[in-house]
Each structure stands twice: as C-alpha cells, then as structure tokens.
Length: 243
Image (cartoon, rainbow, N blue to C red; front, side, top):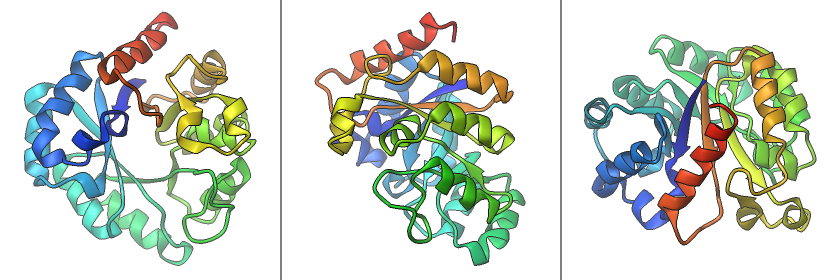
C-alpha cells in the first residue's frame, strides 16, 4: 500500500489556487511523510506536463484527480500527467465507452460514495448497497470507498471493503465523530485520523484481506488551525500501526 494526502486537507485558500501554490503543497505533503496526493480537477490550472515534472522533481505522485470537468478532458489530462485514477461518475449507458477510453490511456475511473445524495441520479452513490449496485451496472469502473461517508450513512466500511474485493481501486481513509454525524453535520463531523470512531485497525485488516496494494488517501474535511501539525499527526497514527 502507498499512503497519500488529499490537498483538500490543506488551507482552502492555498488549495483553490493550485497554479500559485502547487510547489508549496507538494513540499508540505512530502515533508509531513506522505508519498503522494489527490487534488480536485477544477483546481488544476497548470499544464499536465508541468504537474508531472513537479512530481518527478520532488519525488511525489499525483495519485488521483477528482473530476469536476468533462470526462474526456480529465482522462486526457490524467494520461499526460501520469495520474492513475480519476474520481468521477459516469452514466450507465456510456460507461463502457469511457472505461475503454480511459484504459487505452492507462487511467482508471473510480466512483466515490458521498453522504446526502440518496442513491438518486447518475452520480448518486451513498450507501454500501448503492456502491455495489453502481459497479454491477458499470463493469470496469472501480470504487473509491470513503470510510467516513460510509459510516455517516450507516454502512460498515469494513464490510464494504470485503464486498468490493478487487473492485477497490483506491480508498479515502477518513475518521468521523458519530455523535456529530448523527446530526448530519458533514464537514465538522470528519476529524483527524485516530480522533474519531473509525475502527482503523479493522479497516487496515480488511485491506490486507482483499490483498489491496493501491493508494490509501487520507482525508480530513474539518478545518484546523495547524494544517502541518494535523498532517504529521495523522501520518504518525498510521506509522504507529506499522505503516
């Protein structure tokens, strides 16, 4: 397994202006102990060759892009930047077209469950059942299970991982305070890894059970005062478990 950090965890004023702050965010991510990162596609305002060269120069990997643009544009961008995953939704009727298009360019499409979408619509995946049903209808699309969102909607992330098996492309590892989650308070419910109710050892055990060898991207939606300290602390939690 490889461990990465979502740029969304950093100060949003920096993360939303990636063209100006790319080097700084990559440097902080590396210095706090991570091997790679994920960012949102609509924040990418640098050419794909620039992103690729920055990562190479700094010994880091852009593991995934969250797609808020059209699918073809993001697949082409990911291919040129050597980004292995795009986190996106695809309509059932065109899924095979986009799976094939991405595969030809060494890119994999992955769907992410998100609380509050109710299982309705093209990209509406919330529960474990929604996720499995979505994948069954779109062969070749992988999953990016999010432990925090799954717990918030009442799904067991450990069972979800076991059910996904080799359809787990990469994972968002996110802790959650369930007392707040029951009030459906999204952002503040998600906390530093190790501070909430996530059974982290159980999740890691499940990843080993399904022979997962991909990217584990740590997220924390909650805003904090010390972003660098938070990144270091969460990496330390994983190190204490032997990762």
